[in-house]
Length: 615
View (spheres, rainbow, N blue to C red):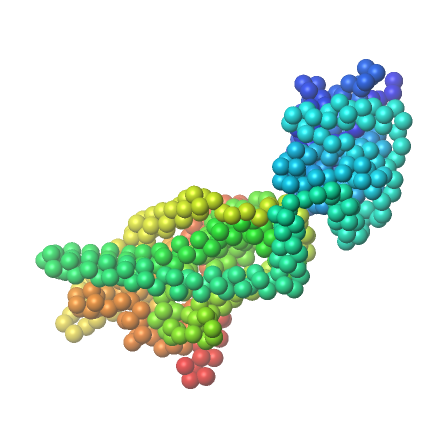
């Protein structure tokens, strides 16, 4: 008995392939797994016009016959007859998204080059027309050399015509016409773009502007320059736009400290409130405006559709460093926090690619570092312009972020040529339409980020600050003796100072490094608490933390401190999530060790270079 004709339904993700499969097979479906893998297998019966049955198999969505995931590997193996337990299809039904034709044609051209009997479903033509795009299916049919049927699967439009085309193909199977080398991806890309352009009857100015914008923003030279300029403006704004709200919060904290001094008679309790709670936690809360400005830019870029395009721009650079293109989104997430960034590496299928991305994610400058950077920059970098509209403080901030990115790429390069030997693969992703960000979505995103920041300030930072205050307040110092020097915290700092003194760090920094492992922002609250304890009540209430730093640190020490925080290991939460995602303590310990070494070398090199330059 001859087996039923087997027709494979193939296409890129989001083409409406499953909806079309459901429309053709109805309830006559089975779901299982492909042999040897966990990828789901959907198959169903199609009743032909003469009553004969045929089997349809809905292949996982793919962008290329060069797989970048287990799903894509299954699709390739089935189409080539290499999947264990599966016979090669007798024919192909290729599903294209009419509104994203040039991108989906890349894969379609590779499929047609397999020279199997083929029918193309030009799906979602209603959405393309709604967006102002009118296509000529007959031109597309002529260019591809296979039948092309317009469909709207979710409304069952064109299903009868498509079934008739499948009937004819199965009754008289003829291979698709060769359309060029399906293995040459550059040729396929160019050919897909030409065919898509030829099939366009008309399109609205909005769609034309989208193509023009992409030709500029994704240009191999202009694109990276524009991306760097956007980042530069973003960091300039972090300082320029936050100046007024930061001053308001500082004034509020000063008034709160004065009120506490005036109303709390008990010396110890007053010290806890003024030196611990207000000085410590307040020193971190004051940076909320700068964090919100940073995330305003990120949310706006995501909302406009630009962020995905930035991923494509970075893909080549990341591939050169040995990272997979799929690592961009996890690393981008790490600019907010390394914890979700590390968790996002689950989308990376290659184990070495994924582990490398996890190990370098902490080098992305997370929002927790922002209070440290802005404090030191505000205290030691002059607030002056170095060019038209270019502030020196914003320029330094931009340089710190670039240093983190460069450090991550260099670390990935070293890891991929050492313990993670191998090279990263490319990736493909749908480009979203350009659009104005939804005001409501931006506000919700900012509210969530503010809530997360304030929650950390009210829990981890508050708890660590109170503990540090207690350690720095007892035992009580003798008259004329520094309270911090005489305290338990001071004695602990003495031991740490021996190690960090060669890289320019003083006793106060040594004291702040240990609690900063709980959360990066705690470094700021720790320094604020220590300086507040040794200050008089009037000094604690009237002088900002930046003003106190200026008289106690040299510029060389300040620059070394910034260099340390570019590379230093992240918080305990990052270490814990690395342990969970790698299922081992080996890699978290390796990560902490190499980051500490990098931080020490960077801080030392910065300090001694600055000293040599007379800073």
